[in-house]
Length: 479
Image (tube, rainbow, N blue to C red; front, side, top):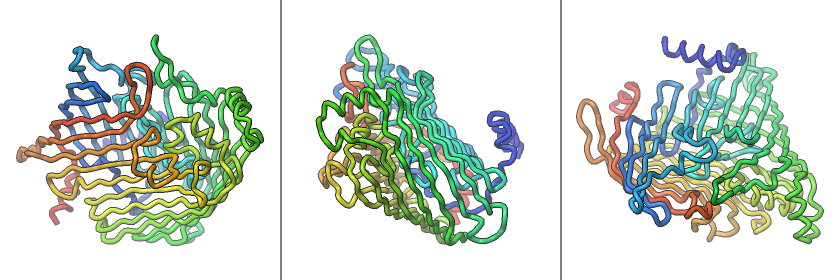
């Protein structure tokens, strides 16, 4: 109890008067476990790592701990090139540099707790109901991870504020999203009505950072942001049902993109000599959707399902700021100025069975899927709690999907990660675990100091781990 009070006053000092009015929400959680977070604990990897054509031997210290609402993870690498004996320092250079050892620090659960923040890697971040920013991932490169920030607070059950900042690199003003929202009847006890929420969102990005910048190479994918990009949204939503085992939300939203005033983009448009692209201007879109959350008998079965129908004009892409935007901002802006009027669907499905089989997935696809209106998709699966021995988790992000072939192939528009491991021995009482397996990533990395592109990153490893679980969780498993 003393620890919680100490943390409360520390956060109050950092965020000033905003936190003073925050109150805890005691409702049951419909949240699904995160992919890849099943094996929390104190530990590290001893591994042989292949990055493109080079072999490295070394260790990664990867503690990942949750204590109540507080969670944090670190990733501290020490890799030696077996060809020349040099220490690989790529993860400590460019961008935020050594701060990349901070994987994440978080407090609470977004939209469940009245106060939430996360610093570090941002995964599947969303602003409001997602018209502008959804399924956003700020770190496309395992080695060039960014330190971002996400924040959400509700004051007196009525006034709320969401903020997202993609990269704490101080060399430029990077992607920034903010959404004040208001629950006019939040302080009442009127069912359904008290959940009504309206919000206004704004997203801007003036990213001028370099992916790589040294004496040999300077790489960036944000040339079209020389004067920034700006978009707005308005949304509303409310619970149709809000029971302990069922929460059903209806929402509607609209978005508006201002024409990007970029000298670089203007020169590109003039070179294209395409009548449609030459007429590039503002764009808008709107959508209606339903969000369904269900669980029975605690964690026996949890189902989260969202279905959304959207419409948009020329020069607009729903959920524009996604993981695909971060893959290559210039390419995504080129898709924006080529986007034709269309309509389509966004669907999100999450399933958890006893927190042992966990599935996350989403897809956004237009009615007329083609090169001018491609789809995006994500799927994640975690079976690490299915047995006491097996550790398995995998995630796949695919952008610019124009056909079934693009779903299967790993391309520059892909991010992929799979971990397969086996707990070969556990020391009784202290529960010290010895784990062996293989870790494969398809991620962005610097290639021979010439190019920054998606490459295979494979790593057989041996891990020593001390799991950190609450006693209550252990008791539930034995019941």
